[in-house]
Length: 347
Ligand SMILES: Nc1ncnc2c1ncn2[C@@H]1O[C@H](COP(=O)(O)OP(=O)(O)OP(=O)(O)O)[C@@H](O)[C@H]1O
Image (cartoon, rainbow, N blue to C red):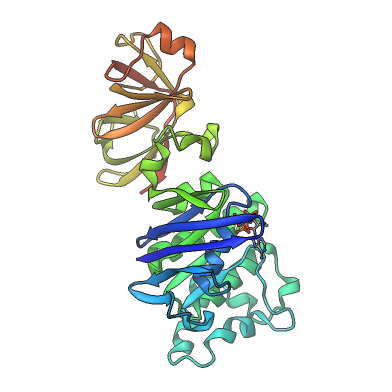
């Protein structure tokens, strides 16, 4: 568990940041200038705030009496630009933080293997692609034997193809090494793929921190993520395949039919249902081509979004004021959600 609470006044911006990050991947999300980089600099010991407390697994890194130097904090830092030593080979860059660590040689082989860095060891950073440079930077951070990895927009400088190349490596870090990761990002798709906890920041403060699925289906928080991204993330378990190949999955709010090939019986998944892919109907609709029509109840109506209870899950539908009026939607109204598209994410 990472616990962060600090205050710092810059001449034209006050930061007052507090949140807790459990294990797994915590995404720090918010508009440019809201204080994300400052926050991870405070955690990593690269900036001393005017007051506060930072603790990692109950080890105090910073408080009124303590200010551990960054190298004693056991935090691996991956920057947006890889910041490799240009005059050193990839191998020398990787060995740099592990020189004085017992067991470093064993870790070296394992991490080089995991990130497929073997063929690059004799190359210099200038000869690497952006994706290869970031992979090297991730390997170097891991070889400092960190207790926490902080990544400041590690994919932002990469094009879509390089992002797609790096993403599976980040998933392996999360799933195989099980190192807690604090991940700064502007990208909702990245956050959806990697994170289990979301910390939303705005103008120097944390406006919300909690499990990703709760944040996504909260109409108050939707504007922070961008209107196109508003929607739910629902946990599902595959029951089996139908005779026509469609996959039946159970959720806390009923069963869904998913495209063929979505997975095998027993597999856990997450279903992403965007608010603009959901239509509401007061009566049970007939003669529709949509596969998924589920009974829901209106919880709240906020800024063009209707929050719906689907059993014990939460969903959002984007609805115009005209439709809210025409359907007479109010908290408590029972209706049917017609889900046009469901995308399937790994659990
Ligand atoms: N050393 C500094 N002196 C004065 N102001 C600073 C300093 N460092 C950061 N700030 C201000 O603090 C605020 C937060 O900056 P920070 O870099 O943490 O934001 P960010 O959320 O990481 O932004 P971005 O997404 O653009 O990287 C900004 O208004 C910035 O101008």
